[in-house]
Image 1 (cartoon, rainbow, N blue to C red):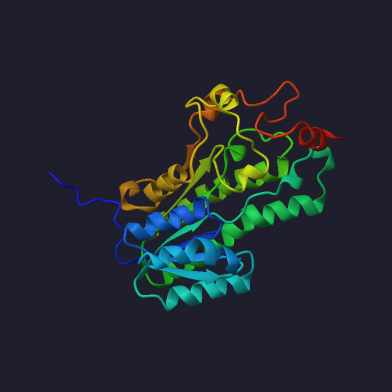
Image 2 (spheres, rainbow, N blue to C red):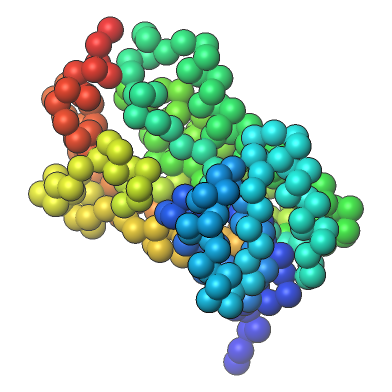
Length: 283
């Protein structure tokens, strides 16, 4: 007996916020388009869209590159304008925009209000207000849908020397659960993924290549790939997860199960050099 449930996104519009970085967002864009969606691929950087998203359109995938800052009301309005001019039914949103620069690693005693606010704006506010805008649009059209946000393993446990980022990502989990309850009866599901250490250009700025360390710290013995994170996101986006809402799926290769990635000084073993470790520990 067949159920008719599949990963097909035919005829559906999916917005990917943070599509242009060449990592998880770009990979989600590709997989969703390959599943039949028309993807509104959003990035602040036109150069990133040209480098990473335009080639997907050149391959014949239904991708609409949109240069907009999803952290602003004007940027969100630009995204919605493109959605309204795109053929198909609005269905999905993936919130990937966010992250944290290496300079944001420091003891909690050194975090300033500006540090705190900047990381919350990038990792929580952007995801919330994009989710708010897309859910409003779905409600106005009486459409069901699926929203998936990216949290982090740092938001599911402790985040030593990265407290603002970890707390913002924990807030994404709380946001996900509350929006899921509010929107459930309208047919809109809201979920999140919490990646562990993943091989992306962003993580390469502070994570070096150390297979022995990976085998020690991660149950599966290696770091994840953008494709593995994107696959989990696509599952939560699709009808395959049609009875799942308000959940945060850890996609970390079992890193949280061992939790052995902290050194004797409680800094992450994934930090690439001693001088960086010493700099972030400075009280």
